[in-house]
Length: 226
Image (cartoon, one colour):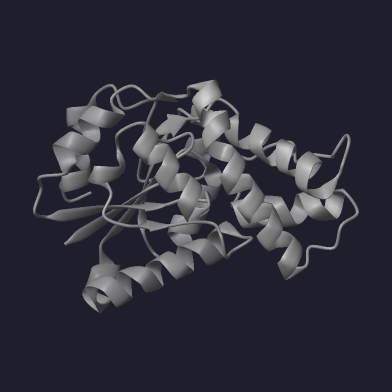
């Protein structure tokens, strides 16, 4: 059975900066930073990597205690910021997941740089959580390749060694493509995040779409022989 690993931000949906604002509030309110330094781009990053870097940028050693405090504070503030920002699901996404969900030849899961708790909140907010069997999030790994390796271990533990031979990553960044190749997975890219068709194409995905408006065509591809 094929495992389809969906990224979340930039691939399925956007929170319109809700995550960035929640992290900024956490740095101000939990760590007393009046004008904290922020990472420029979140694209393709894990939340653990972002939190570690932002602590360092602001002169704070990223101890386990501080990272835990950052995580808890961010997770507490994120739902309110998501509510305020609204966000949106990208075109064709709901229809694509609905088309894939009944297929007996695949399982739908998520490999995301988000913390598992904020990933779950986003999917629930947009009524997509019921399509996703399980989530591996960016709470333990600073690097995307390490996240991918841990996700492959999750597939092996949950579904056996054979399941590791048929994995497809669906994402919107070059980092998604690179980490898919790191674990020997196929990869489908979509240009709904911050990177262009040319940038994604140059990284060598197996297939690339501008968006998922042709949701049935994408579903047919994902359920086919690739």
